[in-house]
Length: 273
Image 1 (tube, one colour):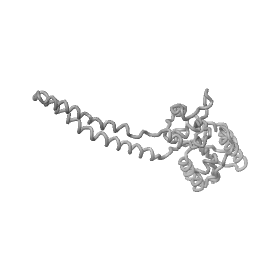
Image 2 (cartoon, rainbow, N blue to C red):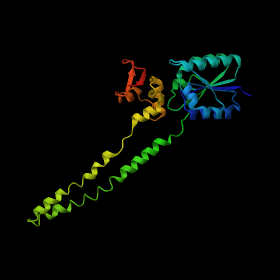
Image 3 (cartoon, rainbow, N blue to C red):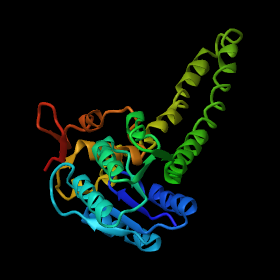
Image 4 (cartoon, one colour):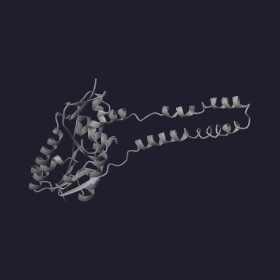
C-alpha cells in the first residue's frame, strides 16, 4: 500500500476544498496516513468540527509574522520525509512559495502532488509538482438569495407607474374644444403629484458592503492588523473581490474606516479607532 501524507495550508484554501482533497486522495491511494492542517488558533476553533470529522490534526501556529504558518508546514514536511519515508506527500495550497520545498522533498525520494483552489492558483505554481489538481470551491447560496429579494422589490415598484401615465394624456385633448374650461384643464396639471411614487425607489436598501467586509475579516473588528495578502484571499472567498482585483481599492473606498500601513507601499490593513 502506498504511504500517503496530506499537509494542508488551512489559511489558504477553503474547508470545502480540504474535504474534496481528503476524498480524492483516499479514492486514489486507498489510505491517508498523515492528515495535518496548519492554521491559526482562531481557524482551528472555527473548523474543529470539520477537522474531527475528516480525521485532520490541526497544527496551531501561535507565532506572529508573515509566512510563519508556511514555514512551520515546510519544517514538518521535511521532518516527515526523513523520519517516515512516505511514498507520496500531498500539499494543499495555492501558494507558489512552496516551490523550494517541493524540490527538496522530491530529492528525498517522495512523489509530491499539489492541490489548489480554483481562481487562486497560478500556472507557475502547478508546474512545480509531479502532479497538480485544481478543485473548485462549491456553493455560496447566500448572495443569490439576497439578489433575488432585491429583484422582486424592484419589480413591484414599476407596476403602479404605467397607470398614472395614460390619465394625463387624454386631458390635454380636452383643452382645444372647450375654451372656457381652460381653468379646469389647469387644475389637471396640479394632479402631477402622481409622479410621487418615483420617490419610492430611493428607499430601497443598498447592499452593505462594509458590513460584508467586516464579516469576512473578524480580526479587524477585534482591532488586529491583517496582511493585505490574507485580506485579499478572504475578500475573494466572500465574493467581494475578483481574481485580478486589488484589495487596496476595496479598502480605499472606505478610507474613513480602514487604514493601510505603511502609507507608502502598504502591505497591511487595520480598522480605524
